Length: 438
Image (cartoon, rainbow, N blue to C red; front, side):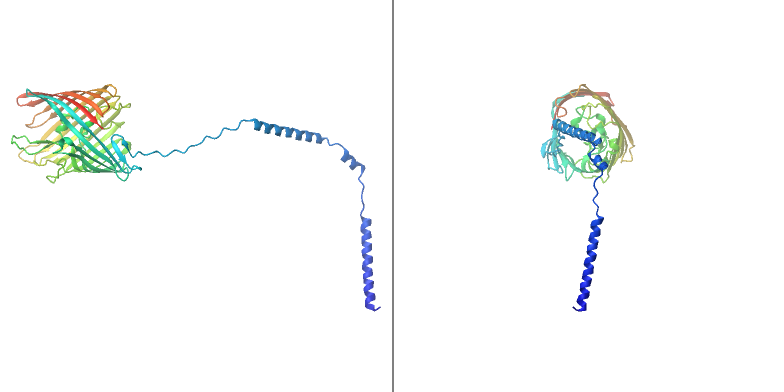
């Protein structure tokens, strides 16, 4: 054998011997210990806590079963109430609401049509002469509504009785910027006498007071050369521009405007304007613009106001300044109302002296039968300076509301004393009115 082979065999043998010795040492080092008696006793001895634990487990299981049984026997909880979504309110596109109306579904465009008529039986006794007859005092139709929203409104009103003279009464548009600021342009009622701010369909008497009509007069030319200027009674309307509003939660009302001064359906004759303004403070509540207390106001409504205007008379060029004051109360069927007027006239004819005129009216009404039967009384006086005569009016009235203001009967009796150069002359008037309104 060669030396290399012998050397390899020797190395292999050494490795085998070392491996055998190591295995023997491992077997000898492993020792299986038998369990001691104490350990066996501990394993075999009963655990004193075991019965408790088992008992608790059994009790727990019983409790769990009882709870489950109770749950199964308990009535089911009441279902939560179903919250129904509110259905959107339907907007009527046509119908009746203080007049017949047609409007768009969103309410931005609307037109309302209404009107009223007043039929009279009249008796007058003046200077020993009697006059009696029937009369259609008013027959009015009105169209009003809004355009492109609630802020822009309009009104047109005609009177068929005055078809040939003053057919058109109202024709204006109104824009509401805020409750405290609105602008109105067109032919409209001027801000002056309160009684003329109230519709003739809502009056407590058959006609307005003597003083209210007197202080709407323009003193024009003296056509018959008797030294007394002709008088043209306006209906309280003119063409112009007015701002108005109700600020401070409607505690204050104001109106101020500039107008032609020539009355309805007329251009400006003398290039002078009428400047007129009015303000009212509602001390308590809202009396509204309806004579009498048909609404039967539960809480007292009390107001006080003042007004004034300045104009130059159309033909005589008289410079006229007027002031007024108003007050009233409404409470549970009782209505009190009154106004005072003052007028200063500086004649256009410099040879004449200026004059000062005064006037007033005071009226009261009470519903002896709620919303059905009202008794009323009124006194009115006009004190005219100069050659014109002082005048008076004393009235008693009775109003029967068949269907509110929509169908009512009114009657009043008046005594009208007038001062003349021959003494006091007294006229008498009796009126019966039937009013229909829609």
